[in-house]
Image (cartoon, rainbow, N blue to C red; front, side, top):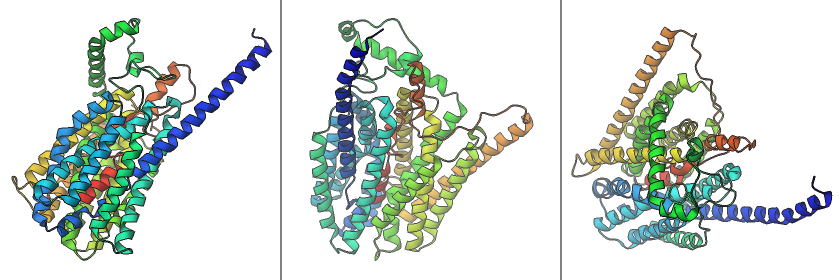
Amino acid sequence: MVPTGQVAEKQTCEEPRQDHELKSWRCLVFYLCFFGFMAQLRPGESFITPFLLERKFTKEQVTNEIIPMLPYSHLAVLVPVFLLTDYLRYKPVLVLQCLSFVCVWLLLLLGTSVVHMQLMEVFYSVTMAARIAYSSYIFSLVHPSRYQRMASYSRAAVLLGVFISSVLGQALVTVGHISTYTLNCVSLGFILFSLVLSLFLKRPKRSLFFNRSTLARGALPCELDQMHPGPDRPETRKLDRMLGTCRDSFLVRMLSELVENARQPQLRLWCLWWVFNSSGYYLITYYVHVLWRSTDSSLSYNGAVDAASTLLSAITSFSAGFLSIRWTLWSKLVIAGVIAIQASLVFCMFQIRDIWVCYVTFVLFRGAYQFLVPIATFQIASSLSKELCALVFGINTFLATALKTCITLVVSDKRGLGLQVRDQFRIYFIYFLMLSITCFAWAGLDGLRYCQRGRHQPLAQAQELRSPLETSVQAISLQDGDLRGPQPSAPQLLSEDGMEDDRGDLRVEAKA
């Protein structure tokens, strides 16, 4: 039994340390969120298409030569940037992202040829691929008990930055009557400031894959190591000599787990939705500004529409958290219904030649997509470890980018069909219509099977749709005797569409 005096002395020593850690954590949260907010302040981004057309680039050059370079280069840099993000432990990639933004805006302001604008797209593809660094950075700095709060704070900062950026850009153009050239100069100033901020970010000591052996104090071990424990670990110096062998073993176990989990119907369904729907979604956002310009060149409320769509997307994403249904039965029907709504909105975009209808339908289109993103994230992450979540989301993003690139090559590129923007939207309408019909047919077949089996075999109960990050850490917490409840893991690593994604959405909207 410990004497009362020793207990009091121990508590007295621990209190200053806990206060210091709490203060350090709060400072870290504030600085990271401030950086995330400032990195989104690019008010000229919503007006890039009008700026290019004012620079005497034709609509054909923008549609069939400049914009197609974005998905091509994105596909090329996606995997290398993903690996470098983890290997270099996030911060260098965040600095690279800011430097790439500087190159984008310098080329935009100083470039005079189609080749310069294509090179600008290449640099922007690097910034798109590097978005993973910010979304995964937060999970390597803090204890898992703080994952959920960190994720919510950082996402709120990004959404606020996107919204303020869009409103500021629209206000400067409409009220301030400044030129798009001046607006892009203002954007470059904000980008340079965010570059300075990135230099003072704290570099983590560990990462998800390559730097797992360097665990921060209080960090939990790898989930796959707990799921499949091996023999006792050798000493650190032995581990250094066998580093390559250990990594190979880790990757083998990850792939084995992935093959086993791929048999789950819900996992396959939502991964397919992620690949096919996000491809169509980004194709729409690439070219929608060109469509608006073709519909009415006298009005330019791009920033206002971006701000409204961001706000609606945040609302629909939040409302999805309160939807609790029997997903094993209704998933396909919900997906089919949302895709049908998207198809009808795309039809209205190109068929009704009214700029206000185009604005409203795009806001609704984006809100419908963002409604399903957190649901898909949760359904994919609920049965996977955080390492597998990162791998699955990475594969989904790569496949979606590859599909998007193939469609661009056939439909948009001048070496393919080279269609005009309104004809492209007809193709995208057919794309979403076929996806919807396929999902409805799939849901109908499931309904017939369910009726034939009868109601004697109960389906899995509806899962509460919590934060997509909550579930995968819960198993570790329980194994450690930690009864804090479910805490988020790293599924937001690749939310190109979720985090993912919010600024990226607006960028590709701006480019279209």
